[in-house]
Amino acid sequence: MEKEIKIAIIGIGGVGGYLGAMLARRYSPESPVKLYFIARGAHGDILKRNGITLQSKRNGKFTAKPALVTDNAAECGTMDYIIYCTKSYDVENGIKNILPAIGPETVILPFMNGVDGTETIKKMLPGHTIWDGCVFIMAYISAPGIICEEGTMLSYYFGSKNDNDFRMSVFEKICTDAGIAMSCRKDIELRVWNKFSYISPLATLSTRYNLTAGQITQSPHYSELIKELYREFLSVAQAKKVEISDNIETDNLEKLHKTPTGMTTSMQRDFYKGKTTELESLTGYIVREGKRLHVPTPLYEKLYDEIKSIRL
Image (cartoon, rainbow, N blue to C red; front, side):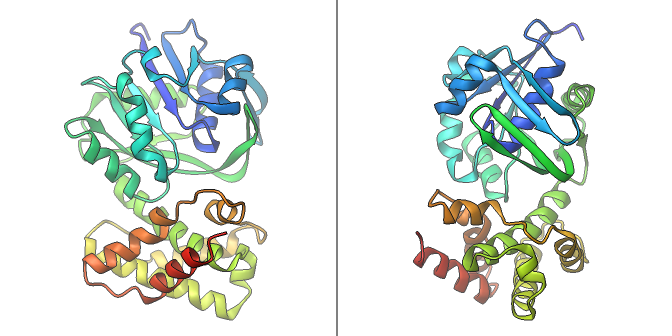
């Protein structure tokens, strides 16, 4: 690969950190593929000094360094690709912070929960190339500068309605050469909404009652509530005319029963630690879209209002 290709990652948490570590291991700062981390705080300080450490079930433990770690996107220059992995509630600030690195040919690829984050980016950057992304990974920051990956699923998918963009195959090869399970898919909307249909009801119910996956599946009461949330979600998705699998409720229930019984959701963990949560993206979005489309979502509305009322 002769042409220099510049890739920035913003949001070096579980999703972005795993990607960043794998890419940095494969592509040294002297490589034609230049990797940039946009990070701040204690995590960013450690990344600057020591690089990023990945502790992975699949890839062992290693430390690697990108070409640059900075909290100032202007120091990076114009990027070819920006991988966007912040929480959905921080999208507007995040995009404003990386504007100096976005040129007319820059591709932005979000990997976030829900769908409203990507919708916001597309509204903020009209005329720019913004792909859709979907990721299945269990990874998190175990300490500043250290990413731990330990799940049974690990897949990154991306795509766009404009599936003839040659930059897709270039990006896919960069990632797969680095050992990342990255796949360009024409059915990306289906994958995004299928995932959203799983995490939105589960995050909503688990956060409201502070439940593990096992407590939901082993309780007739909570099992019925999760089924009702799936049905309300599907009604909204159908009214929006988005692609979603016909048997998604059954698929989601099967997936939930296969989930480790002690699993909790990231929104639930953030909520009970008193942190900012993705409530508006994962729960509020369905409530608001239901009202806009005149689709009843009584259980979603009830749990949404109750979660807001018991905010720690």
